Image 1: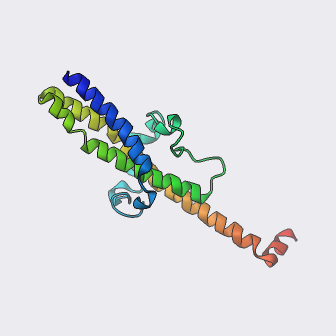
Image 2 (image 1 turned 135 degrees about the horizontal axis):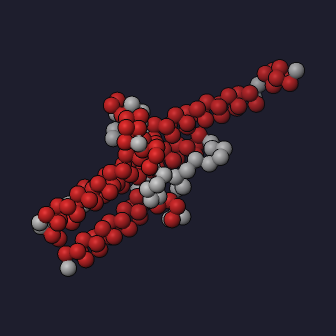
Image 3 (image 1 turned 90 degrees about the vertical axis):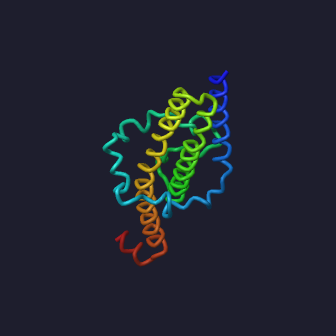
Amino acid sequence: MAFLKSVLYVIFLGIAAHYIGEALPRKWFLWDRFPYRAWKFERNGRIYDVLGVRAWKDKVPDMSRVMKDMVPKRVGRCPKSKEVYILVKETCVAEAVHVVLCLVAFPIYLFWRNRVGILLTAIFIICNLPFIIIQRYNRPMLLGLARRLEQREERRKHASTDPVGEYRRRT
């Protein structure tokens, strides 16, 4: 019975986390503020290279591939800075959801109240950690891309509104 309760609790958490995560106002998630801003020790996400994140990050399940109401977690062929900033916010939301899932894992122990409960709680937390690491790894790179795209868009905007510069380029 405890096993069934644990499984049902984990299923409930997964379903609830999806809908709550989608419902959260994106204005709450500021990538340049605590806790989403990269810490100095993270070296803009490069610290996670030690864990080989680049090799395994695309192999973990991605709910946005299954749930069509989610923002796809991929940058398109010709992205605009605005689209990349949306994806950056989504990394903040995903990180928050997985951190909360780690915190609400402890009731699993209440179903077992022994070593099995401790083990299952630890497994649930450990299974969520890679998703937090992926968000912290991807966010600085996405921010760099968004800023480069923003600069390029700004240059193109100025070039299109500068008739003298346009004339010089054609001649």
